[in-house]
Length: 378
Ligand code: CA
Image (cartoon, rainbow, N blue to C red; front, side):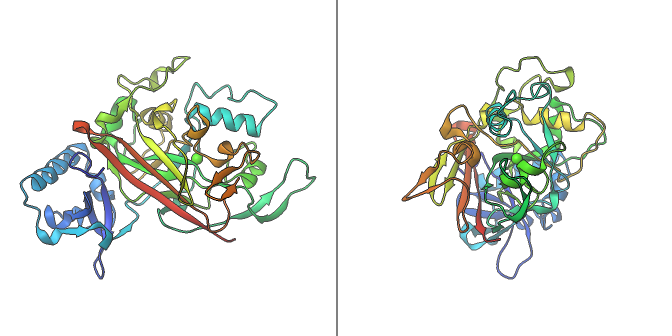
């Protein structure tokens, strides 16, 4: 999972030392500030390195590979992974959350709007998204406090205020921009601007969301927390994972067309209190991440280093491939069994872990690690 074909980047510290950049190799973290003697890796975030661009990303990856292959990594640069503390890998500039799974969007349409078509008329013409809250993107392992807010069930005449009773997850992949741009980033320039990918859990309070989201989309039902995994897998490690999107019909407008798709064959696994409940397949996503970024920038919106955009909940066609509990339990009507207990939505003390992996070069597997979070009381 963490072989020579992966080499994901993260920010770490050891007891009494400053944060700096390392790569994961096997069960170790290699300190790049020591190994490559470049101050860009002595920084507390990946942003300065990500801003240097693809040519430099390729050079550094080759230098790390050479150092490992030639056994020239200094001994004081190697730390057992269990001895380090991981930190937020990058400063999040803006955060945009897409809605790119046809299965998820259809299921949510049926649950939220049972009397109309599951997919809205725009859905197959553009990657639908809303603008999320960058300031509450948190590192894996951060406790998630149950949000409070306004809720109104359909059979209630007026809203009430209190802790969310329908707290949920969204299993997603997120992509981080390295090289900024003041111009639209067409799909075929994706790899010149996007540095890599992380796993995202976009925590969602369904009761708050259902009451607030018309007509401008989700806000407080989502903005309390979004968790990301600590290791950023570079796009350079994901060539072997590239696949085609499902057939896009109608054909997208010109600015969304890719000459070779950036759809990715990533397998996710969702565990609830230690029990596997779902295996969302990223390859089923209708829109590729390159199409998402192309859409996000086509209106002239600029991109900054650290911009994060997430795919939206990943759900496949099968029930055990659904990446949100509202779908898995069909709005709470079909509880899932986890060990000796059943659940519909998250209870205080529950922990969710989302892991991911993908095919790598030379028959290897590329591990993304995992994103985890535990619910604490309101
Ligand atoms: Ca989401």
